[in-house]
Amino acid sequence: MFTIEHEFDCTVITVLDENVATLKEDIVVTSFEDCVTIEQFDPRNDNIQKVTLSLHQLKELAAAINLPEGVYHIE
Image 1 (spheres, rainbow, N blue to C red):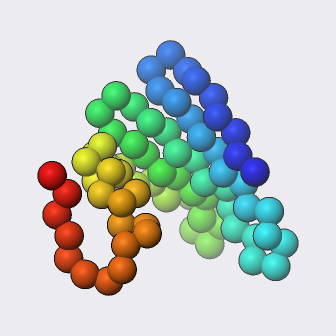
Image 2: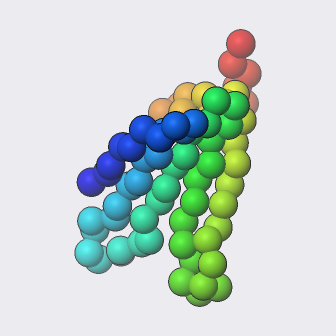
């Protein structure tokens, strides 16, 4: 399950883990004009882990998900 919210300067997508056997914390993806952040609460450290991707990195990550092993360059 996921939610999508449009705010003034960004779009926020929250992905909830519904797999009871391996339940993980929710993931929050925030899309800004120039970057995307991915956040997840880490209960081991009691803090939020955050990764920031450029839009180019996000495009390459999305393309890589369905490709076989190898080295690629997207124009």
